[in-house]
Amino acid sequence: MLLGSDHVRVRVPATSANLGPGFDALGLALGIYDDVEVRALGSAELLVEVTGEGADELPLDEEHLIVRSLRYALDFVGAPQVGLHLRSHNRIPHGRGMGSSAGAVVAGVLAARMLIAEPEVLYNTTAFLLATEIEGHPDNAAPAILGGATVAWRSADGPHAASLTVHPDLAPILLIPSTRLSTRTARAVLPASVPHADAAFTAGRAAILTEALCRRPDLLMQATEERLHQSYRAEVMPESWQLLNALRERDLPAVISGAGPTVLVLGTRPDVERQQAVCEEVAAAVAIDFSQDPTGRTTWRVVQPGVSERGARSVRVGPAA
Image 1 (tube, rainbow, N blue to C red):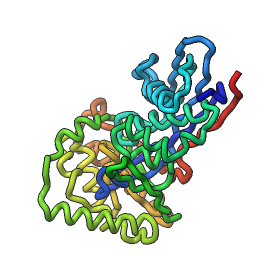
Image 2: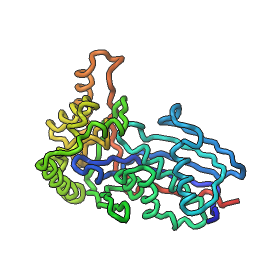
Image 3: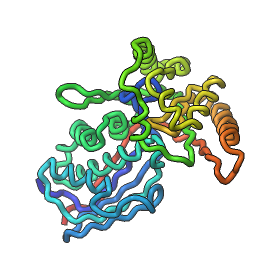
Image 4: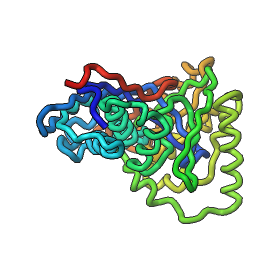
């Protein structure tokens, strides 16, 4: 496989997985984006520049997740490894349950897609397969690539994903904390098994949630109930857990975004301004409740990102030399 371009750009969205009862299956692409630019170099040199989120923390060598994912994809299609100049401007918060690692993986795979002479060999089905192999879970990779809402699953022949048509009134609200939580920590507190009644309850709510996301937003409050993972994670994200419950007491369909600690409210367009005001009020109250010391208090940023209907996009800027 030859290279077909030496300069490509990728834009990849943030994502929220689980959406409450859709544990490890449902996901939603959000209108917050990382922008990535890659140039193939004639030498074996690697240059990595990062601005925005994680600029002072991410590796600037072959360990960078975008670089690793790009090289994995090039190896998969038998394309030559080349020197790279990577520029990444990150807007997706890290360690907040918003798919930052999946976004980096997808960005690397889609950059490889545009670098090679036959990009069709890395179109969505294969790109999703590779992203899942690298990331380990399909629930964030699916909405990052396909956009909108998705359901992902695994079978004997690998991971699969299907798109859901999101109702036009859906208006997600994010409550993003200043603190972080690793996915590994959040998964470590989950039990090996749960009561049959809890599993049945959550399966039913996940089925309702697909209807609520697509056609019946009036069902979102009931559809976002679950008994599989959020309460077990309360011990490692107590503020998020308190915030989630306070919002639900105010009739807002709040869930933990991915592994947390960000809280996602599946708001609706006709009422979203009131819903955001309630989110800001409740977030401020929870911050005060947990810490009377302003210097040690968790702060919450409340944003309306919109839904990223198209998902990640990659384009060629220049031909191969």
